[in-house]
Length: 421
Image: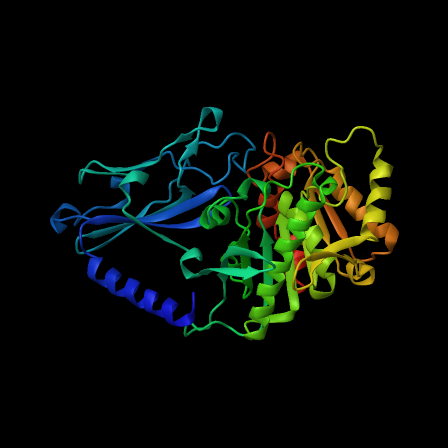
């Protein structure tokens, strides 16, 4: 989407908004949370302003509203409705804005992870609102992003790009860039679905960090376990990375992104993709975070005939081998720039009890790089107890990206990343 069409769309949306502020309808305001959308306020516009003139917070009741994660981070137990909805009400003519503690748009997770829909009621005014009644949603950060498609290396992929703005709404120049790699569960999904599957695109903007963030929708089949045994699968992973790198180069050429401050992170298959990205383009990146990484380097998961040390030996050998690079016509095998790869610091994070991508993969990657001479890597392994402080854990120990993106404590991976900006 070019700048002209973007500005026209934004102007048109503003004009429509001004005209419809007081026309009957229901509009919601939300953001991307750890487990999908989080709703934080609703505008209810009624035909008769007298019906809402004297409404106050105590006239409203919310049910089905809860954390954006399955577990209550305060107790580690399955999340229930909030004890305090934190409702506040403001009235402008015939429009009532109801603000509340942000809750999961799909409602509370019930038995067998089925959602219990939320409901906002005001018996005094005869108002009942559910998610199905909301006719329009404004989404923080996402509505301010640029979407489009990009072609390179024989592929065309859709992307979403967040660019931080100055006080006049113009993109800042030469900012750092984080490129987020999607997980296997998001392959072949529409772009927006990949974006809301986790907070990879929005986590830093929500913190107010002046950083560009990029996410591509990739059409790979799931990397799958032992994908490294299939050259065509690995070649496609590397081809996707080549496309992303070419797009990043366009942002650098336009002066939007600082080429000396490029960062990469991703989870699950995206953690494996991050590893491949560093093997291909380590000389381009300042640092990276592979989270609960899969094994597109050598077979690690669901491999029974090898002992742990043998995995490390195999990875050491692979790190000294080849990746695929685009030569203008096709993807060809090319030697890894081992010095650049080892000098680019990586911070590995993984949940100890992850049963989907077992923690051994992060240990193996870390140990292999250390054996080869990497000096600045770090690794943090989350306990189940620590995961539950961020609303996941237990059956969901694979979801260590939630803990990664929510944890900015001293020494955490995100704290480490921000200190390099």
